[in-house]
Image (tube, rainbow, N blue to C red):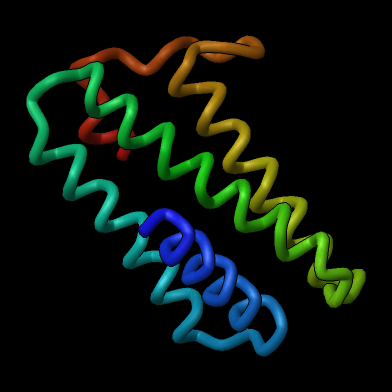
Length: 112
């Protein structure tokens, strides 16, 4: 199941990056929306953090795999780098590392 999810995310990102396809963007938005729904459906802050962290890590791994294919233009690489930076900042904020204040338990739903 995990492999299928990662492959799906990689495929979505690849399509979005290579073709500039609006549908790819919608799929990524749906992925993060599904994550937000899971977070909001959970009462335990520890579980909320785990869901968010797993989602961010999955997306980061997908980006790394896309980069490893070597099929990304320099322009697209710049976009991938910006997205990777944004994902890392979100992970840092969630964990309270690298100078970021940790997201308060009461704010996890909004953060998602």
